[in-house]
Length: 140
Ligand SMILES: NC(=O)c1ccc[n+]([C@@H]2O[C@H](COP(=O)([O-])OP(=O)(O)OC[C@H]3O[C@@H](n4cnc5c(N)ncnc54)[C@H](OP(=O)(O)O)[C@@H]3O)[C@@H](O)[C@H]2O)c1
Picture (cartoon, rainbow, N blue to C red):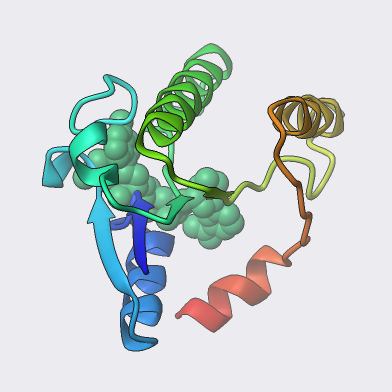
């Protein structure tokens, strides 16, 4: 089964790629350094060809409010559009949104918008809260 890990060279992605490869899956790590830019939409049709699953572990280069929202909206839109065209059936996204509630209380609302959008698109949403500190210890 071909699994494309978008952001597969990052902190989380590289660990995920190693684990899935060890488990015997056909893994492609996609990011700008491999010629795939999820914001510009470059390289997506090629890398998604024949994929069964996409795992999105991208990270925004900026956490400024407007920039991070633009990054998440644009990259997610480009990925979902390219996945639909390529016949990819499963999209898994890792996010901390909604885990803690956020300093200004905006995160739960943002989570609800993401979940509503995914369900309207015919998707199934599974939430699995992860303790970041524990996850980081496990990954290290
Ligand atoms: N780190 C943690 O402890 C932690 C904990 C919980 C959740 N998370 C979440 O996990 C996700 C990944 O975090 P991380 O710490 O692994 O991030 P990271 O180390 O910064 O890695 C980000 C990845 O995204 C790629 N990337 C960035 N912009 C891109 C673009 N426009 N197109 C394609 N690829 C792009 C980068 O590679 P290139 O530079 O080659 O493009 C890199 O592979 C984030 O959503 C984060 O919130 C992280």
